[in-house]
Image (cartoon, rainbow, N blue to C red):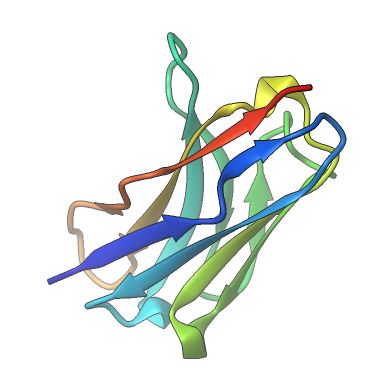
Length: 118
């Protein structure tokens, strides 16, 4: 079975940093585009960052310059380094995997909570 397990969330003060991890099992990560999405209470889920299986990255304007997505295919793990955190970054962050060979439903993790507050 396929599992995406996020970790690294927590409580951090504004201006602080966190690194989120997404550990994948049951898939070969190198064949997937990976992404991080986030959802705050009462707000529609939004894309934060993606990284292709070729290593190309895309970021939402709201996080560009502050967040960095990376992948380690040998470890089947994707990371999201979050710097200069703002209260508006508070959300549940979800890991996403999109298969690039044939059309399939995406895989999703259960989420990890990030709270930015003083």
